[in-house]
Length: 284
Image 1: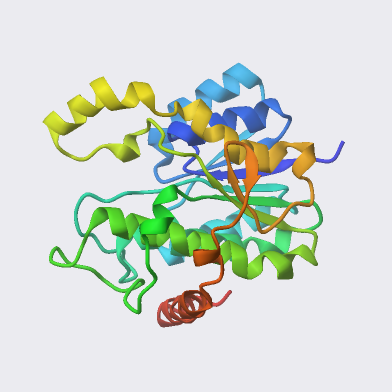
Image 2: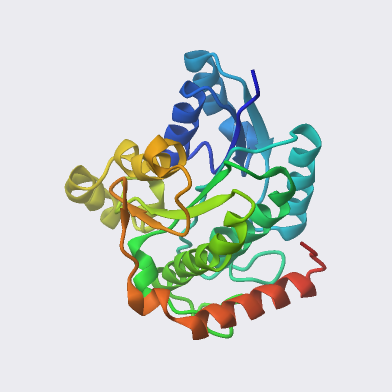
């Protein structure tokens, strides 16, 4: 029987654990791409014991372009094909932070890291491969500006708009490549999980976070509910061949024309992405 390989970024996180477990139960060997392999090891051991599946725990820093290329080369050296790629990992920084490559850290991980990883893995993706990137309704708050992939500082940093920027960029990335990659049999979509009770919504304030735990978390999606949409796009037979789409509540939703037709921002993003990679010596 042909091996079925899936890769999940942030595989030991709130929704990442659900994604990994579900794919393992569905018969996939899962590459667990995690920021810290030792921190992720208990999750790895738990899912492996529960499912009996073959899991591959691998470490990658999505905020470091050189480490992403190292990781992608390692994956390509071990696996000849990849059937599912879930760009699940994400950060929402509380304070201004920059990556080792001179990029605001939220944009570096959420967008540029996944852009680089996805393109670097293209040689082992082909007919039937499904790629799903995790976005957020926050993408409507975003705006792609000239300095999107530049360094930031405390004066100009806003965590919510910065997060929205990174998710809008992932959405534009999907739109830009969907038609081209469809010719190779590759489907790429985005999934919006709604607001989910994971660690990413913590605000870094003890009192606010405690109130959130008491009053907000009980009324928002559980990690299982949040993960369901990405898993539907990746696994459901009814979505085979579906590409270039926005998924929410396990269904394909109509694109918001305001963003879908924003050619100016999409062209700007393509240019500054190319420039950010070039200045860091990355060739895809």
